[in-house]
Image (cartoon, rainbow, N blue to C red; front, side, top):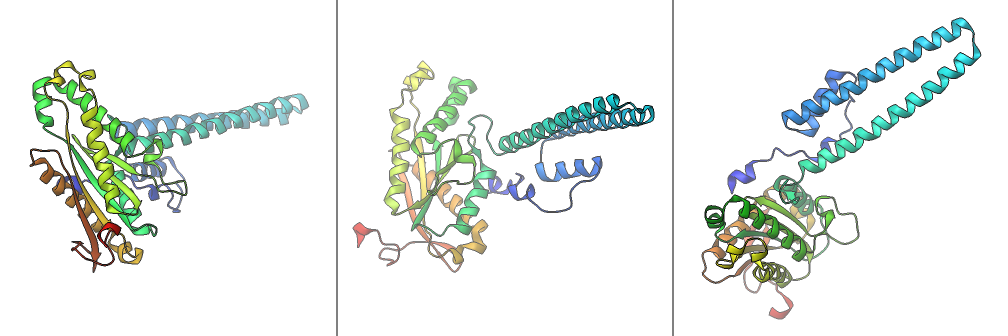
Length: 324
């Protein structure tokens, strides 16, 4: 778990919006791309080559237009000048089209860097960024919940049935997670509506994690985890492979509910708080895995002096209505 938390090499969106000096040369542009997009070597090389091709062609078009303008002025032919003007307008339109193309390309590359290629879910690096941002800024609601989900005995499916079946299991569980945690195609974007969006992500291998923000009571988080577990159990796994009738897929779930309290208490410890919540959910998930029966393991916690501590029975600020 610690190794997963240490892998923070994913691009942050504030790199693209940083109001620093803009690149003026090809070398500066290449350094700008490498610093802010964090692409793999092949993708970075392809992007730089494409940009260089556009710049070279643009420069050649500009030089040609300049030469034609000089010739037209020297010759004094008004019709030649009109012709040159028409060509320049067409070339300007071409450059604008190329600019829009690269804007779309950068947006697409950014989106791909935030998603797991197999399940199309938000990857763990982006998930932790969103979780940290939520903890540092969110002022509504009483509770939030961070959960981890693990496919029970996944190694057996890979070893006994093959990696192709294992991949189909992961993809199907991801689809069920999207359905049951009430997430949609906005899951990898910032919240754009008045209501919070549940976020979920591919945590690694056969594990997934999710955030349920702005919930009134902890039992709601338990209900979400239980619906997900039941959805996996109800699914007809023989649709993926007939051999799964012998051992249908099950999952284990661990959920930590955090009493949000004051945003001022969370703002400067959001990163450590996010890591602690994920670690606690991971521990709960493995405790659930150790049981023979399927369980949703849930823990209530709060922040005290910048540290996450378990809620005690009777804590006045965290008591559920049915406990009062």
